Length: 554
Image 1 (cartoon, one colour):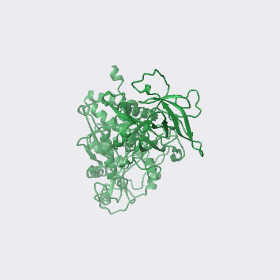
Image 2 (spheres, rainbow, N blue to C red):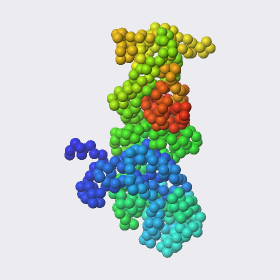
Image 3 (cartoon, rainbow, N blue to C red):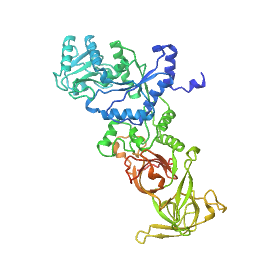
Image 4 (cartoon, rainbow, N blue to C red):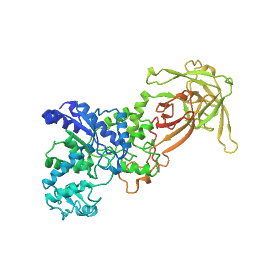
């Protein structure tokens, strides 16, 4: 076996085998089938990259299909968001946008066919009784007293369901399979139920709707999908998927499962994410702490970083948990190449250069991106008063503190070497409010003739030219690494320090930044200008720190 073939994941090996054998004429046709009942999250990104990526690799096609069979939970808002985020990730379904609701007429006829074959029947029992009669994995189910209704009676009642003659919960259509099957999904599953709810696409045309299991596989077949790639939780549904195909004698789409993406310190459940939104634990689906694509996009994660992350973690057929630090590394790696550097001070304290001419402004040259020579350079203003980070000064620094302290020298980046000559403290709080330094004119960056060597280099912004900014320091939303193993309410594991807001000072070049612009605040991290920004108000979200400095809390 070649080295290239050894590197193929199990899905690629299967597909190459199918192509070699001429199965489906050598075609590869996949689909990404979201339910429009919430926003896509990072787990969906893996599936999107996989389905569209597999199709592209083997010169195939990938459909976008919305499995919209639960009208009370679905909305056009979710449809639009899903389409927008898939395109943002860099994928295009061209003209292949489908909906399970497109197939409602055909699915109804499929159900009629099953009734005529004696493979489906109308059940009048309540949902609670049907669920109880299905038994348990160790105890077989009990056959319904309505299981032996005649074909004619079932057809008449099913037509009545369609016509709205019955109320919700009064009747359902069940497949007639095997109540003693060791596979729970095969114990006469419900395939149609009454829901007198308007659908976001079909309006009031229907008052009965197929279940996900009945609509999903048949929609795959209608679209001639050759490889239906699902996450592992659907493995137990595969026998039912295949049973419908066999009994309906339709195109034999084939379901294959892969491991879903489980990230440390992260919830990837639409139901639980909705609970966070509805309970106001976050500000919305696009809160930058949320693992939704809308959230991480607003936080500043890039499409390339997510695609690279999906490639790195690969495809497996066994569940595991991926360290979220790997995703953050992918983001840093991409932004390091593309984000211009700027100066920003998050917790400012004023530094006065007492021997620099008061009122003088000097334009200094700064590199925009050392990783990209084509990004060029810019000028930043320098004056006798600048802001530095409060943490960059200590009144009584330890030996290995290489930043500023009394009688210590440091370089102000792109500027001069300065030496601390004193400081002033607030008489009430004891906090340092002003630092005094002298600069050495012979140490100008790029023109230094002094021969001095200093170990510390500080970021700064000119006090006379800086612009005010609100900086939102986002951290991980949860403090527990593996949220799949907890027994209590997942909300008990929320990180109380997941958001810290700072009133910062940033260099004046950012006055013209546009929403969505990304940059690295030198020595601070990567940031993006948030949509909450308005004229005269600049709001920056921290995308990710410069390195993984996470420590477990709680």
